[in-house]
Image 1: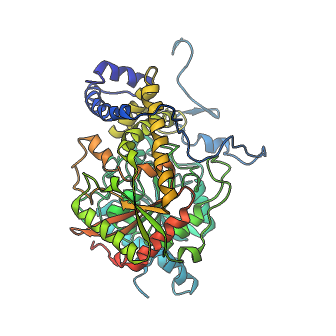
Image 2: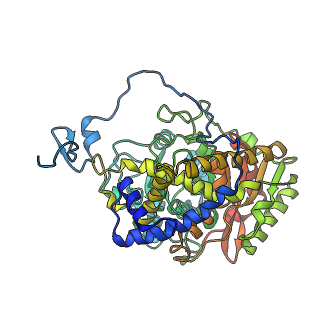
Image 3: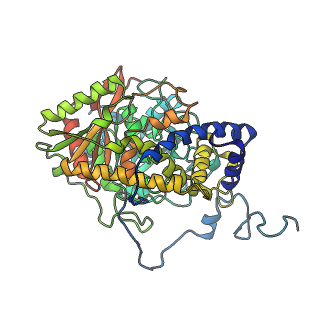
Length: 99
Length: 450
């Protein structure tokens, strides 16, 4: 297996994806098979080849610094699962959750 | 006048102009047809009964203000966008309104529509078959005359492949022709919105409507692409048409091959010069694509944190999770050079293949999909076999070039599309070739029996 179940667990943590035991097993198999297929890229000689990240040909695009209307606070918050006093409610980031 | 819902956009615009038809009658006719056929086809996830403008079907991965937008995912169930995508505003300015939001593979990830969180779309030509994906709902809605026009999005073939499998026209413009603002991002360096229509002229009109620079999308070209109807209809005599040997190898269904070769013969009859070409790196396109795609997916979908909108990340479906996992892995420490950077270099080689070929030819033609529509469930257990069904469409996204699927016949009763790819930013030549082919054949007149 190219990607072990332990590695799947580690990647899932990095990706912030809650996976079930069964999913970890399945993804270990399926992703290993996909990575085996992708392995063929190593047979391509890319010495001296520049990578392509964008094909638009546009560079350093800037726009005029003019104020325009944007979403109102209510609109920006309208889909938030939890809000309070005009803010999004999130889990605590620093310290203990109930500390 | 012919049946209202069988009219193309071009014909509908004329009928409206000549007052042979009112917008009320138009919307009524389509709503009636949706009422009759959508339950079975499941092309629409949402139908707007109050539309007063020219009725368009919009893929549900494009945000529409005040109209639910789900990206065909449970994670966005109940999401009510506070703004309209740029393409939607552009359509509104042309008197086009939203008749409904169409089904597709979750977050546009898939080739069969089986990854939708809201049940599959059925192919109007044979309801036991997939409509293709990811824009399967838009394709089925156009094929079954449930809308005048539709929008789809194409990251690796998601407009062209379902267009081919459902026997309609699907056009992916050059990258940067149409603003992506308001398209829920899958892979930003590949995504492009485009039309799915009943005719090539319709596709050209819709592209003209939605194209143009946008302050919200820095990759949009400053110069707007505009339709020149005289050029569109000027014929293709003397045009150099490339046929790549790599597109006719193992894996191509014999029936599809026969139909596509007959289409190429037809182009020859129309006065083009056929030139044999080679695109040697085509065989690496799927592998490079899945690394680049998955990497961009894992980054783009990080925004779904359940704080500002949407539900928690366990609500993603299996294919979305699979791609987020693959992308996170390929971008993770120690693997970046082996996977993402390597794939980006192979992307350069694929782009150069096209650049070399286009020194000799004006367009490149071939099949859109290696097969016609397949049975439900055939490829769902093996994600790799599903990925390989996009082998002919993926390279155009990697290179950013324009490409269209135009109906070119049937194999065992199922539609086949002709793929026409053009030079970067020479969208007009692609449309011109497709138009000449379409007008010389009668395939567009065939309709599925529902």
